[in-house]
Image (tube, rainbow, N blue to C red; front, side, top):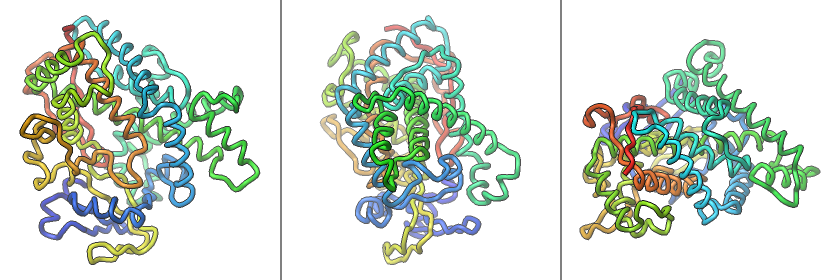
Length: 441
């Protein structure tokens, strides 16, 4: 879909494009100016979340991601405030990531310079951070049930970006009865839901309202206080919101870190320059802190460029017209699905000097100081931007700086053979996996 509704199409028809997908009217917003005007300047008009059938199936219509109105406002405010209370974006979370990075380094050391697939090491590390926040525990890298859950998460993301999911979103009633990749995704979804429900039950049995251990405890405590009211703090919203956080907090960030390693192997001069800057500011022994980022302009620029170039969610999350919306001389009718194409922002020629090439200079000024670019929107923008943005930024920086302190990364074959274009591009960009070699520095 991203390939069809692209920048060239917008050059002919403008930045607001309407497509009929089955019986559903869909509007695509193309380019930074249109996306920013909608999500930021007219944020209240575009605050609705689209009832995409696949997402409705995943969440059963409950939870933070798919909700609108008062349910969304209450769940978002509660989720953000609770995660901040447990350290998201603060020193407490920084320490958790630093501790988990030690486990990751120790596990990679066991490979003894042999080639390995880093996918599940990285997934374990990133997932353990969200597990600490939500479930109050981390899991061993050898926990087979945990590894199976991570496989289910990977399967769901692949399925969401497959032709099966596209067909399901257009013809949900028909596709419910047909076999295909979407049915495998639904089976994985049910396994993850079972795990979340088990954790909620464990928390209910051991809850101490005066001493909450994690997000689930805080939600259950709020639910008890409001049990006699018409509240959004009920079981279905808890299970679906925790599912959203566990899924969203695992796959996207770990995939970004894995893609970053592929980039640094393909462009070893970038890796070497990052390591030299890290060595001069932090050294190879002290753990990095977020405070170090301002003294590491090239590192910061390279990591921003990784996210821009990766373009992990090219379509952006679906928005929805909750009422008729006046926009750029048009009226977007109530009930229209709206996709702000993040791909068209992150790869727009007006915003980036070399949009389809990896180039850290996009985020450096003439004096080699870090510079922001307002078109850097990998987490979307406005009131429905990703609630885990600050956590993801912290994880990407701390994990990758720690890895570059300890290891130099290569691959078994020729570095030029690494292909950075996505293997699958739809709801998400799914990038190729490669075996890598981590040599102790």
